[in-house]
Image (tube, rainbow, N blue to C red; front, side):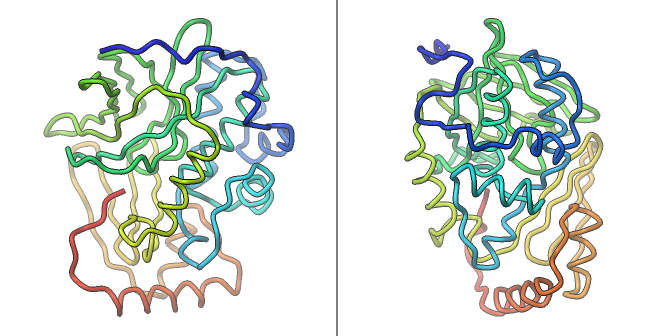
Length: 297
């Protein structure tokens, strides 16, 4: 079942999303983009790729006991000025603000992570719908390892190939589903409905993600990165590398390897005082871990 795009959208941000605090020039420098500033599909594609290449997916600050505020000044201080990484709410809300400042029509949406499972999970993932000249595109610069590198058209059966990876969008009952192609078939990434959301909806979902004991982001360190040819995922000290042909490489890191791996593999730089804090937090987390059902993103 197809859905009509949300009504009442213009190129300006809806009143509830104030994008004026964003330093657009600083953001574009942060992601290394110096191309055209026009609201076209090609520019969206370039911005999407630049953002996900520059700003890494991680819950590092959350794991170190820091909050995850979603107001635009906080996002700008963390992701732009301090050059930190973040997870989907932070990344896609910052990305949405930049797109709107450039004249794109953006709808912020909440999705349910599937990760190959039919289990109904909370709406704990932020994604974006971008309308360009009557064409709708799904953008998501903040999923992590298996997320989109470039936007994909939002119509039933649409496919997009970037590098060695292919995604498609299907309609499943009343939901849109993003799927990633694996050697053994299509893998459900997340699902969503096209309905309007407000800042309070994202604050609520973000609070669950950052605090609920069953959240995949609580009590463990996560970092993920995907590019055209390989995907890396770190969970505490377990590093997994996924290749397009289905090969998976797993490695258990020593505590002393953590800082170099975060830097070299994930592009994350720790401040001098943070590495011992992170090692201590990881040692405590692994010591306290008990066998439980695996958490999923």
